[in-house]
Image 1 (cartoon, rainbow, N blue to C red):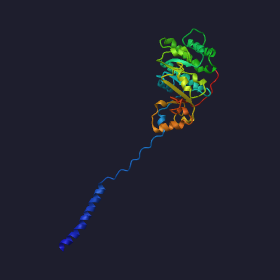
Image 2: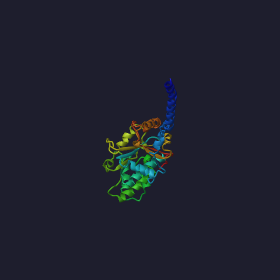
Image 3: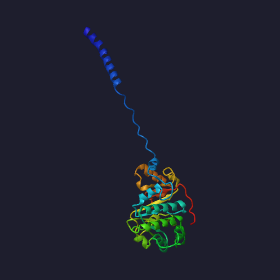
Image 4: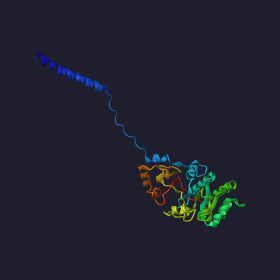
Length: 291
């Protein structure tokens, strides 16, 4: 009887001690860390902003224009989207980029969509032909389309004449589209084609520009620059500047962004027949002044 009572009395003591030990162990064990919530992904616009390049002034000395010239300097041909009314900004960008490429030594040919005879007049001036006329007078009197006569072309002509005077082994030619000078120019240096402003925007425009240097033979490395004032790009390029679409990351958010923006600007869609390589957004657009 005494043994049974002792066992009955010891069991509660054992259970109490075990409970105390468990409580002590739980008290010393660290509490589990709360679940870590994944950091929210940045908006696609924030990602693309880091890739956009701002341009303060449409001049060859602007860092943004210099960066654009560098990014396209390895191309066989650089050309511009046409269509719509010609604006001061469209013409100024052509002039600024062409001058920046000329000063870098990368440019070998300026192609205009003009009669070959008119292009020959401009080429002779750029080559240093003796004359008392200024570039402005040459451009005004040359037998070329009025749409190609601009202060930007006159300024570029002056730059090319100066370059050719001191770089006789690396001269820059001027040619009409598909003219002999276009196909004979140094193939290892870039060409710039100014001609598409006179065409309506259509899906064949890019193909036509790509073949501007050699008739029926498209450029192997053609950079197509689309110029726009589209507000849909304002969250990426708030002012004037450019975005190289070839350098965009191939991620679902970027693909979705391109598809969304292409509803108003189809040339941002990768599979569009005239898909841009580089999109340049102008903060403002003023009609081109008569020259």
